[in-house]
Image (cartoon, rainbow, N blue to C red; front, side, top):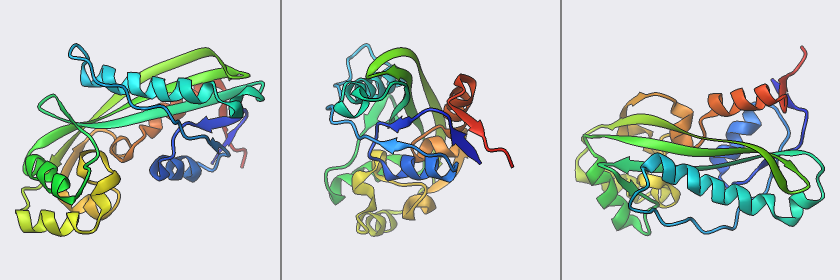
Length: 207
C-alpha cells in the first residue's frame, strides 16, 4: 500500500508496532532503544510523560552507530502507557501484580496514551522533529476475579502496559473503545502515517 522514500527506523522492539508498520507494506529497519525509561516527575501530565519517554528512546537510537552511517532517515519512537485516575500502570512484574491491575481496571474506563517522536535525521543528528500524544478511552467489562486469573495464567499480561493486550487473548476484557484502536495496541497509526506522508517520507504505491 505504501512505500518509504527514505530509510524509516523504528526505535522499538515491540512486535505490535513492527507488525502494524509491516501491514502498510513499507520497508523499515528496527533498532530498539536501550535507554531506560525516565521517572515521571510530579508536575508531568501523563501525556507529557509519554512524549518525554518516546523522545528519550528516539534520541538514544538517533545517536547510535546504526544511524551514524545513514545520510537521511526518519526515526519513529513511541511509548504507550495506561492511566487510571492519573496513575500510570506499567508492565506487571508477575501474574499476581497483573491480577491486581486488572481488578482495578475491571468495570471502569481508563486512558491509553501513546507518546510519539518522529524525527528527520542526518547521519544521526536530529534536524526536524514532531512530538505528540494520542489518547484513547477504554472501558473494561466487570469480569469476576476467576476470569481475570484465568487470563493472567496465560502469561500474556506480563509484557503489556496495564496488564492486558487488546489485540490478543485480552480482547475479551474490553467492552468499549473510544478513539484509535491502534493506539491501544501501541501506535496511533493514522497520525503517524499522516506525518510521514506530509514529510514525503512515505508515499502510496502506484497501482
